[in-house]
Image (tube, rainbow, N blue to C red; front, side):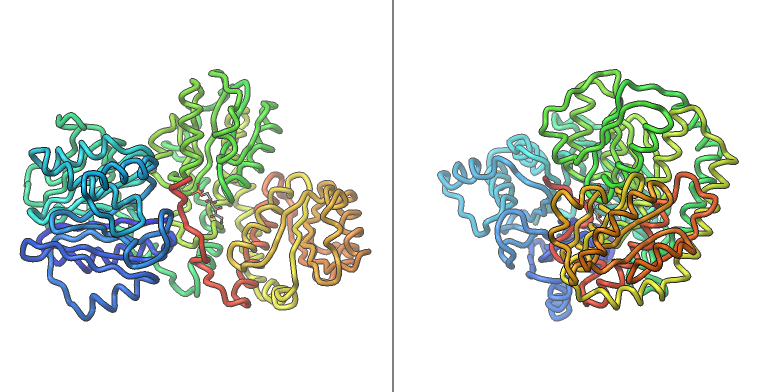
Length: 603
Ligand code: F6R
């Protein structure tokens, strides 16, 4: 979704801002813009479409500036065009905005009645105009920002720059925003995503909601200062001094980030053992060992929800606690029955998904404990939960989530066993190392998967089926395929086929059936029903299974020997590669599929 990058310092501002925006391209956007300050005047350049369009204009203009803010916009209010792109500004201030101002229409009418004009269709311009209006009524820009911000409803992050100074102001409510500092080179940064600042800063600040941040590189004692809305100094922020290396954010030898991230999985799986059985990891496991809850509510979105469905099975199996796993967007509005002796468990790669955050708030409000399984340390979800099980997947750039799913499931497995009081280092090490080996073996067989993809990619539709532990994988396989290959795909519980979807089966429909030893006979007969209706059968099953191989058009046998809980990871990785190769044959934008955003920070 929208991305923000701001810079102020002793060097050129335009390049780091554009570089930061380029890093945020993976999040999805449809226009980009920059505002910079030069000789006490504000300039704005913005272009519909890819960042390249903006870069071309900048290459001609060669702007010179040491204070700038930039933005990539993912349209919510108003069509995609240059005017609606950010920054928005006038001769006094420029602003960038992420999120939604819910009372924008009301405020717009008020401002129009006071004679202010609107050029764009965006809610963001409402903030700009209200801020400009308040500038005449308050003493300082800081006061005007606070007065304006106090009138807004909804979740938003803003960065504000004035023609009069090099200082950047930023403020947010339930939307991501970080401030960065490079103390060695006297430079300050602001961004909606710390990833944009990798390599530029040596300190990242995570302010809490409704804290005004003042980034002033010339203020030697406090180049990044935080204020409460009443003007007093605020301590409501966290600092991270961890350096992230730049090579983790390049594609390396791979054509796409998605493929690189799929191939990272064997190492990441093993990493979980070293992390969770280190002194620090064991300390955390000790803290939650044997914890009992009357009921566990899992809420998440998309791939993270599918991980939640696998985790639900683990928790129920090991702890005999009832667990419900739900779409965060449904959970938050269905008036769930919540009691304070229950747990809210939230799963998220980004830790910034608006619906998931809303569920967490709802649970906290009802007195429940909140735990997360999350990738992004310091994210809003991370900050809001009592206990965070980090998945240690590293930065995930491909919009289609792959390695995060694997890590979420495996961390969920550790959590379930810890709750049950049966966590055992030797057992986990054995299972995860064996899994890692078997994942590597699958990755070595990528050519076989590519071959299957080449034989089915032009078909009309795809139904993914599985039962029990593999049912969430059927859902996830279908989600991955539709999001990156733009083909119709559905995930179904195999036993549900004959209650409706079987009418879709003909010689153009592909059934990707996951038939593992668990519930084998039942799943086999579901596959036979499809076969009898001339559907094209791609079967994923256990290695050397002649029966399955004989009945399928394409068989992919998987070595699952010795694994107990983690076979869904193996089947899922086959499907990740299958989706990837189908998408490649179709020529889609694999890392940045159309209409999608990496982190869905609005409802
Ligand atoms: C699918 C995908 C999305 C995300 C979902 C939740 O490949 O990436 O479905 O899983 O938007 O995002 P997080 O995990 O950041 O909360």
